[in-house]
Image (cartoon, rainbow, N blue to C red; front, side, top):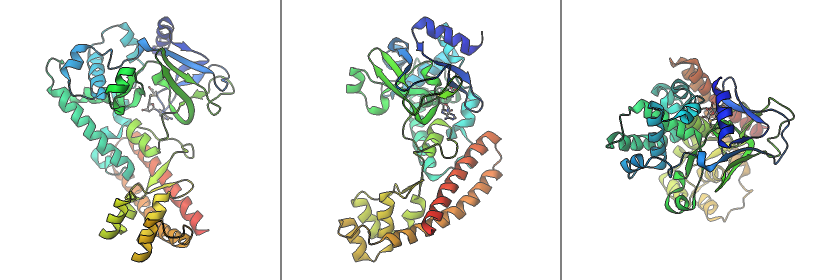
Length: 382
Ligand SMILES: C[S@@+](CC[C@H](N)C(=O)[O-])C[C@H]1O[C@@H](n2cnc3c(N)ncnc32)[C@H](O)[C@@H]1O
């Protein structure tokens, strides 16, 4: 029996209910879930009972005790890494057989990429990666210093840590909801962890009995063998790349946006920066497929108007429509510089000596950013 067939027969024996769906190997996307028939809106297509979740509550006490100040992410990863090294039972062996390999994870996740390629990530992805690295380093420092945990090397721990990063679901119990910070509300679960992401995907919910995945109007299928997705969240492609190691094909990510901070922030005088910061308008200047966000428009007015006038913008004393042309002129300047830089970055990405998969992922991200910027330039210049 192959690993998917084994998982299915195990799932059935444990009370997991797959309704109109089955896992399948999908080229370029690992394993995903496809329909076995037409799926209608509001159908519950998967049920996973709570006793099959891996949570803080059912992590072996010895591991939790060895990591007293660690995050749930750190603890689940330690427990997973130890089990991967020495599978404790047949249930785990069946589940682990459908995980992406260590090599798959190392290729897809930017935290594992060589630094010259990481340096060429878009600024938003680079910022997320920097935070992720801080979290991982803190977790690894605790795990590697813990007594009585068993031998673990950094590479194996990173693999388990990234499996947790990419495969956990938001989950709480009355106790964890009360006692733990939001970032610690996580659980691993078999089968559900095989759903790939789409912004229009099915919804995920849980009760004390377990998790259910329900089709929405946008995640139905018209027949068998169509991929069925869940929605991980309202994420941009930079977020998906840094946190999950993939980006969506052109035009599919309705939540995609690009960050303009690198181009806008250096334009402000210290007085403007202070004023923007004190009113909560510093940084986070985003462009999506439709428009530049409100923060960007405020910032562009501040950078382009004389002092008395920009102060009025921040006080809310200036007519919103008065500076539309100025905003467009300023934005156009920034976007043209960005577009020229993107062409250069694409050349540099081509020149880094890495495997094709990593390079293509990053090249495609820059291609999509370039298209978003070019479309905005065309829209404004019309
Ligand atoms: C929860 S797992 C989903 C199952 C996964 N494909 C597997 O083989 O185990 C999340 C991972 O799946 C991949 N993934 C999810 N959605 C994707 C998509 N729309 N396109 C490509 N890869 C995707 C990414 O590697 C991500 O880190």
